[in-house]
Length: 401
Image (cartoon, rainbow, N blue to C red; front, top):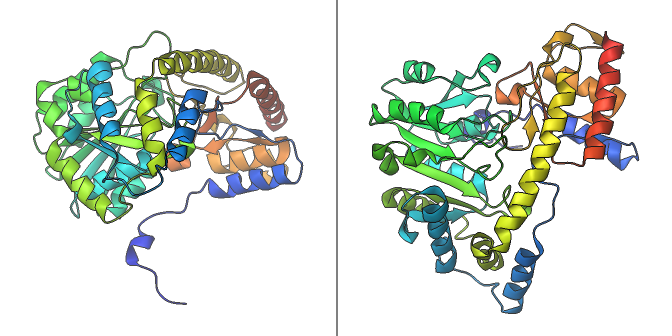
């Protein structure tokens, strides 16, 4: 045995790992587990993208590339930002990383100094606070209340800003709650940022294609003229193109920050996998992509509304209607204090554990997202699986009384 680095004590183990590991073990043992934990589309990567990868392999694109990628991919991303988001990024304003998570981590490392505060609205994606701590920053949570659709208000945001505030993270549409801000609501937050020149925005826009109910997407950097040079815009291919395993993420932002991130990357992974780069560019430029993405969006909207309706009909359960992404985030706290078999339900973790053990349904506890009263269900699964799982949940709750 030898000592580990002190930084390892800064981050927490995921409290959902035990539930996830048990679900996997149960499935391996032949038990019919309905899994609502997926954070990825259940659709396959579109065929034309896979064919482009095969062609890249056949052409021998298996060697080192420039950091962070071939010029063709940076040009395609810059063109996408201009045409779809109204963001006048040039290729020099673009970097690419091994997925959205890697891009965020590199950006925190490039921007934060020890003690810098990062404002994170809750419920939040589990990795934001942990990455901030690894980079020496201090995560500061601003709670989005369920009564307000999990959205923070400009007044809350303003009150949370201090002289130490360095970064504001905004994720809309959101994981884990599926909520989304309107353009007007985002504009109100942007106007607060504009008044505080030390604050940089990390806008995580990976679910931009998955909006429902006619809601329109707006990139944060477009909402106030002064924010274009103070915003890093994050996106990836994982959700929009069902390419989670390809690990392609990207950032648009001021050149000096992009250069710093590329310097980091030159000493880390050099570049993303070579033969994924041209297919990633084709995903952004081929007209087939828009059709495929819209078909996927429509199916997710149908599933999401169905899941939300059924969850809302469960006794003592409340659920904010999903406006984007592919998650519902119901409040199950009315069942805390109940006993399931020999287990006492005290929070979302114990609720999820009992649900898995007794009814064979896997959900993600909200504790790691700042809400121990809620669980996350993904509707990135078939309608038949959604109904089977919700039937089981209804029976589980009935037994709890």
